[in-house]
Image 1 (cartoon, rainbow, N blue to C red):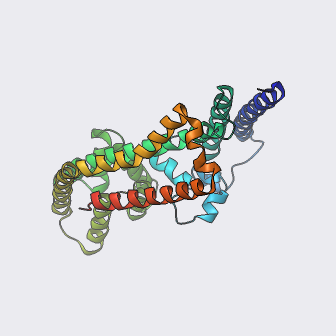
Image 2 (image 1 turned 90 degrees about the vertical axis):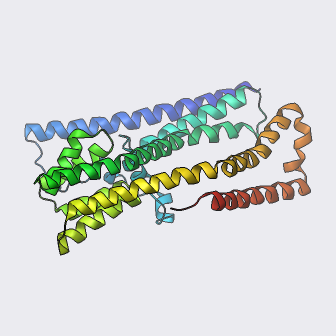
Length: 318
């Protein structure tokens, strides 16, 4: 291992880390200076800060190149809001870059071959985004399980003579997070003058849940045409509970297929890593020989097609 190359790698890692820390500290310092100027009267509040509908901190981030190229895919900003984590997209990218440099440095220092050293760096780069998606999935799953109880609580509040807003406030006070946070936000928004319809639609954007859309649609229709909203909410809660029961049965019946899919997809990659550790020259032909490259590309394509087919088989919509 060349000392010059090692010094350059360490210098690059330290530079990225220091640059990211300086960026974060400079951003916080600018925010603090702005707030001090505002309190001392040196700078007046602008028109945007005095409106009821304020933009979130994430809205001030400019669109990234990935978001402009893929407008139909969910943006990182929306994923952060849905996961309810207080972190900026730029900070998340900075953490991923630092972890990627550290992972690649560890691989290279451990004696891994140069063309394989970036693999650990790529894995470490994806760690913050995997964490974000995991937090989002866990929050959405918890919200879905709490929704039937929340609808029944709102229905009981309506039968007791309370308004819809008061019923949502009861849910915010009596139920745990995350559903309490979302209903409390809707309640506070309508208290500030935002129409209930717009507040409910905003909640659907923050929580992409089909059952929640049923609830919001029923409320919007009832506010237009009239009817017994409490009875409607009871029926929606019953339908949601039945869907959960059927989904549980489907999940139990497709458990064997899902496990087989996981094993079949992970087996080639696991065997490749084992052979790479035991006999590297045996598997090097997969990317050094022309026929080996064709076989590798064909195998990856067939793996993706197999994963899609298995997912279509075991993913039964209810």
